[in-house]
Length: 193
Image (cartoon, rainbow, N blue to C red; front, side, top):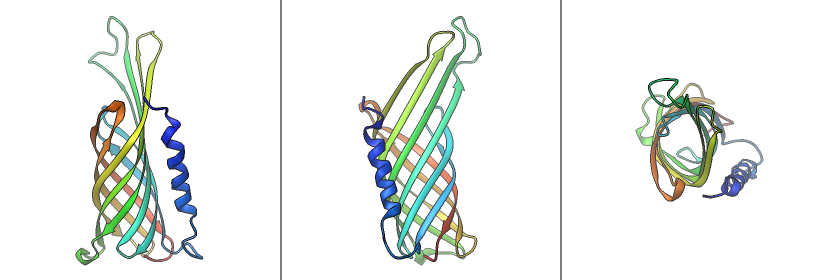
């Protein structure tokens, strides 16, 4: 298994670097977002997403995104078995960067549909505890990508409500896993797109 920090730190530095790059003399075209995300797999994970994007034109942006999903659950039908309660905790983090393409010619009223492809890394940390025994935990960090799309609903020239759905492909423990990721968020764009 890979060391958890092997890819996380370089990806975070890339994410921060994208935000700090001098694309111009002002924040025109910078978008910040945040909201709720749900990721299937590992008994389903609910959490939050944070993002930033730089608009190159009204139909193209470069987006960076962080998702943090959590699950705390008890395994089995009964809280207490002959070995005691079995509890599982999972924490999945995704750091993804890639282009987002808007289909401006298909815009309907305040709706603006888009497609996106993002590449990066995912980190999964799992803990299982069976009764009074010590907690067993494991983690892995690996390459990930997401292909999907969504729609922005323009509330005013700066604020949008966004819904998106994507296929998140992770590669933990030398295997590949497919997960669906649903995001609902609010975005704020400095200046105009």
